[in-house]
Structures are given as C-alpha cells and as structure tokens.
Picture 1 (spheres, one colour):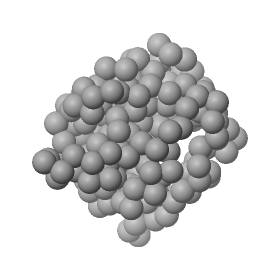
Picture 2 (cartoon, helix red, strand yellow; picture 1 turned 120 degrees about the horizontal axis):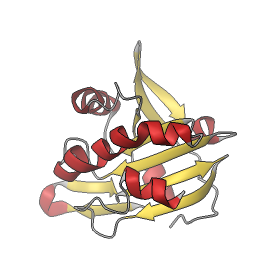
Picture 3 (cartoon, one colour; picture 1 turned 30 degrees about the vertical axis):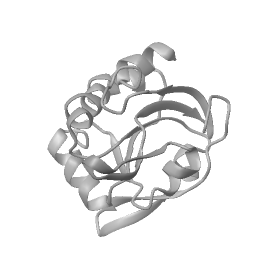
Length: 161
C-alpha cells in the first residue's frame, strides 16, 4: 500500500472534456506540482456525497492559499458519472477536478482497492486524502472505515499540512 514518502504510480484516468471523455495521466497532474488527491468509494454514495466532497468544497480556498495547484477527486466510476456528480454536488463549480478510475488501475496500483459485494461495490477505492508534491506523497490520511469521513476530510488534511 502507498505510504508517505512514496512516489505515486502512473496511471491513466478519465475526465469529461469539451468533446467527451479525455484521458488524463496522473504524472501530468502531479509532476512539478502540489496537488491534493482524495478518493471515495463511489460517486453518489451517502458519505461521499454528504460529507467527503463537501469538505473539499469548503476548504478549497484554504488549500489554494497553501499553494496547492489542484484538488482532485477520484472514484472508480466512469467519466460520465463523475461529471454529473461534480455538477450535482457543486464540486465542479468550486474548482475541484473530478477524475474517473473506471478500471481501478490507479486504485489497485496504490493498494487502496476493496470489495463490498453486499452493497455492490467491487474493486472500489478506500476513502483517503493525500497531499502530493512533484509526484511524492507528503501526507496521507486513510480512513479505516469507508462509511466514515473524518481523517480524510478536507479540514483534517489541512491540519496535517
């Protein structure tokens, strides 16, 4: 599993662009930049929608003030779902980048995948938030319970940096 001090594995994610889905390399987002990446078990799921995304909407300006170039939300969903979820939560309007990891490539490379078959979640991402500087993990806050958003909330990551 990824930990503080590690370099992020590269992977290709997707986002909605002006002409439809576009590929996005994690390395292009992180090399030479200071970014926050937070991941959720699923778009439109309870805690992700009511707590996790709102915590980063609330703290976006504070991250900007600390020199963070971009705040990225990742979920094992397709870019269409991530786009619609970003619109419906206000995350897109707040300036958060919504990226889909549809094949769980990035999530699995981090060692952050889990399965919860009773609720239909397969190869989904654990809930976490990290600060990445030039591709290296500087701070990592991982939730033990995917139904809770405490240490992975925007405020908690701000406190850690």
